[in-house]
Amino acid sequence: MSNTVRTLRATAASMLLEIGAAIGTFVGLSWFGANAALAVVRGVGTSPADAGVPEEAVWFGILVAASLGTIWLERSGYRTIRANPAGGGEFARLSVCYLPVTFLPAGYALSSVVGGSGLVVNLYLIACVLVGGWLSFYGGLERLDVTSAYFVRTFLLVFCSAVFLAVAGVLLPVSDVLRVFVRTPVLGGATLALFALAGQILVLFAGFGIAVRDPTPVLDCR
Image (tube, rainbow, N blue to C red):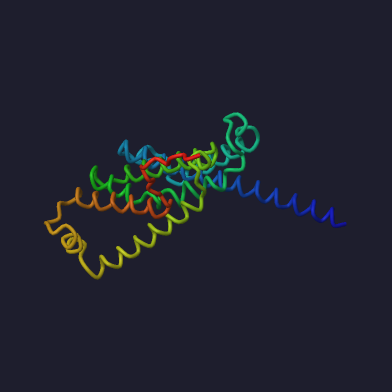
C-alpha cells in the first residue's frame, strides 16, 4: 500500500511540474508576443485600429499564438529545438519578473540617453525574454554557475531601491539629491544615466556576490 501511495504522489508531483512548466511557457510566450506587437505598432507609428483591426482581435491572436506555440513545444518542439522541457516555469519567472527588474537601472540609463519612448521599453522587455529563454531552456544558468536565487536577490534589491527613491523623490526633489552628490548642476539625461549605471553595478555586485580575486599567484611549496 505504501508503494502505491508513493507512486501516486510521484505521479501527481510530476504532473504538477509539467503543468507548471506549460503554464510558464504560455505566460512567457504571451509576454513576448505582446511586447513584439507593441514594438511593431510603435515602430511603424500606426495602430491596428487604423487598419480596421479591433484591438481585442490583436490580443486574442497573441493568446492563440502563445497557446499553439506551447502545445507544439510540449508535443515535439522541445526535442526539435533541443531545449529543456522543464524550463517553462523558470522561463516565465526570469522573463516577466526577475530580469526586467534586475536590469531596470541599465534600462533606465539607456532610455535616458536615447529617449524614453515606448518602443525602447518594449525592445528592452523582448531582450529580457530572449535572455530568459537562454537561461532556462539552454542551460544558461548552469553555464554562468548561478541559480535563480541570485536573480531573486537582485530583484529585491532593485525593487526596494526603487521604492526608496520614489519616497525620497516625494520628500526631496531629485535635482537637489543629485546636486548633493555631484556638487554641480544636473546635466540632464547623462547624469541620470551615470547614476543608474552605478546603481546597476552595485546591484549586480551585491546580488551575485562578485568576489575580487587576489592577483598575487599562489606558490606551490610541495
